[in-house]
Length: 300
Image (cartoon, rainbow, N blue to C red; front, side):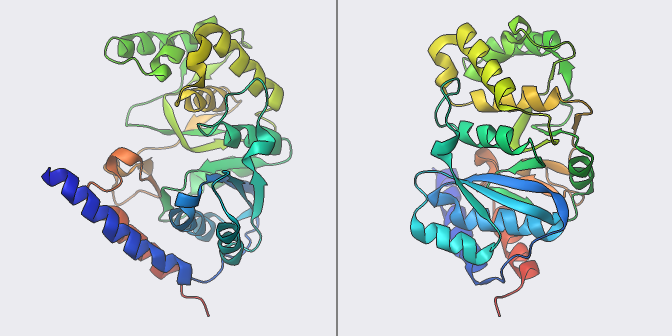
């Protein structure tokens, strides 16, 4: 009970502090030849502004794209345009295709597969914060290389048989669709050299030309043939993102803890993902939000 009360209080304090981002100066278009993409819900507008404005400040992407969940209303869109004047707002519904599940962040991966024809794309969740120059990320995107962020220390890119072995081990204690999907990865008809990384799709990079709608659709259709209706469950987008990013030529894992979930933060962390289980267990997210707002500067 005490932990639940503390979490609620920390969430309240974060929301109050984070709302000050609405008084910060608009973000300037960067000169980096790559795209920063996020899927944005109505409930995400304030944390998304923290995420994208801190990333723009440190990484300077030329393009910023928001894939609008149907909950994003006209007022939300006006706020996004006020703070990121060059933002491109695309409709999630426009990226639904018969071979793909609906929802569960699939529309953002579908959008990446389309945009990737012309530019490298980094997908960042609305609950990320960037604390300093993400040099490895910018260098990779400019070079057209893909990357995956580790979900925990020690995760590496492995072949599909090794990934399936780990999936079967995890399946002994979990019925989650992710382990079910990982367990059958070797059954996919894929090009030689396909690999997998048990990372987090909340911060993932796709080099220009490394992901196509046809490759995404084919992978999804094969997995549905193996898993049936379970392929519509939450978590399948992350499996697919991990698979297709890790299988791209030159793909690599971002160094941990320079890029990590917020429960692994150190002084060297450049990008942190305040994923749900660690978001409000303490007041770190609030304190980092306040520091970010200070760095962004107030609107004139």
